[in-house]
Image: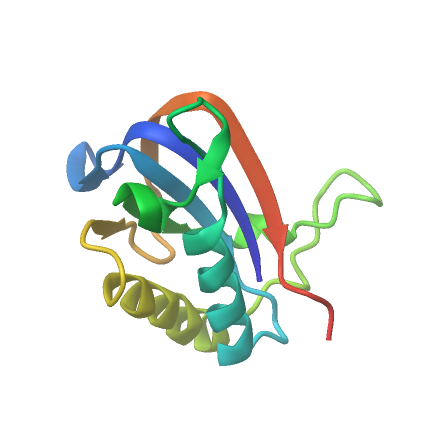
Length: 148
């Protein structure tokens, strides 16, 4: 799995002009599922996302996690994170999981996040979405699960 984390002051997702999800301070997670991913990658990545110390403490040092601050989590599926544009001008998405694999793992990630975080919002898998956010920092982190 691959995730792009953005620390946000607020974030919302809209489809056709209608807001379907929003959070206050926390993290936007753009989540890509690899064709070989399993529940093990879901568990590893969610643990990393929730425990990553990228929020300021009292000394203004990045020393607190999302769990520590009680922040929100916006999770948006993004198969394009597995784009391979090394050759030609049209990216290949061969490494991205097909929906039969990606949807259950995305939904599992969201369900497991909801079990640990009070404020979780999501996009709609496969939909054209408008993601609006106010970066906090900005702080942007790229996470990949360990190779198998």
